[in-house]
Length: 105
Length: 432
Image 1 (cartoon, rainbow over the protein chains, first blue to last red):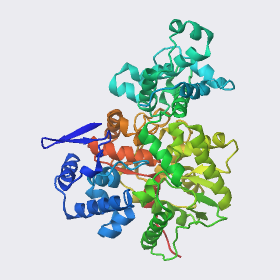
Image 2: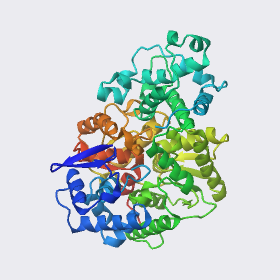
Image 3: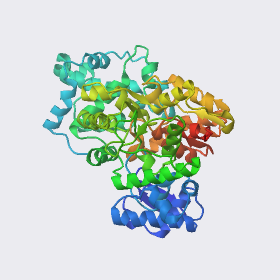
Image 4: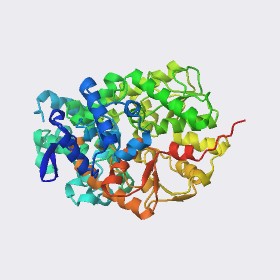
């Protein structure tokens, strides 16, 4: 286990920086994790992505396909990569408080 | 960590007692402790920690071999530096063999007497896997593949939806409503594969490859039955698991009656299917090539005609260890870049002596060792910075992910692309 420190707060995360307890996630934590990644402010588009990821996780227990994120938000693929420079997995899913997805991410 | 039991010890030792493995025995007993491997290893170079020296990792395994498989070791273990297979040593083995090795094989090339250090590490991992000590996060990825058929547990319906989406994107780009991404079509020339991270999160490489196939007028298909090019059991080194996954690919090829298996851009996937696959399942695979070789062949034969003017930014190349050092595929990716980009610059060192991205050997999946993985990647980050390139191309999705992460962490400000994306960007499709 390790921690990330931001704005004087300490967040407990797994070795890869994903939350160990996805249930403790809230919007404030999302803001802090994003800030830690260099995203100063989460805008409407960020939140649209985060909400869909979170919703999918709560319903299906896993991150949604990028297809679903694009379809539901109406955002272009490349826009999502720009909004979360670390990508949909290490960037967006992490900010949304999911555990690390399996595989090459 | 679960405590060691007598049964577990037996399972682990079975691996070392394989009498027919003369290669293992000679490589376990050949190290002359010259120390040359130290400076070849990312972990030692980045940390200066002597525990990280590859020879020490080999000794972890050979000390156990001496303890249980040699007479002197059995009677006077201290005399020959033999070690017990106990909880302390197992913890150390897990930490060093799984947690501090990307299986990049650079030490093997630098070894003064040619010890196949990577093979010994894999054997050590195999012992640990048989005893049930694979790091949890790595095992989760293997399990996902074993139970669902792909390492990200993507349901078929979601996969098909994504392929359809990419097909629409392709049709838009090509301005041709008949352009397709064929799926589940038997009797084609090529059965193409993917890394599951493509449909899940990064599908641009799927449409890029489809564009290349379109330009080459290739007969090809994907298959829902088995499209996952990865075999994470190669990293966990559990022989039973790696066999199941390799067999699936073999069976799918038979079922789809394709002439050729084409492996997506994936270093270990190339190795686990093309070079280890036949060993895993005990029979030869039908013709199996990597997409890099295939694309280089298209360019050479004039089946596709790239225009270098369409890729004007400075591009450098990262060589995936499994493809290059272990697989000997060195010239093809360079041939592709020289024909598709205007400004190609090499890293130093490159090719056979290239440094690993830091994400190999299953490291990318193993959360337990994340900090180390990012730290050792400082060497790759420096290499990239020195090239002055704006784009890093690499024929491996695993490397792409690691490089994308260090791009942010080390503020490299580059773009990371697969070879298919670079090639697709260089193609102008002329409609008759």
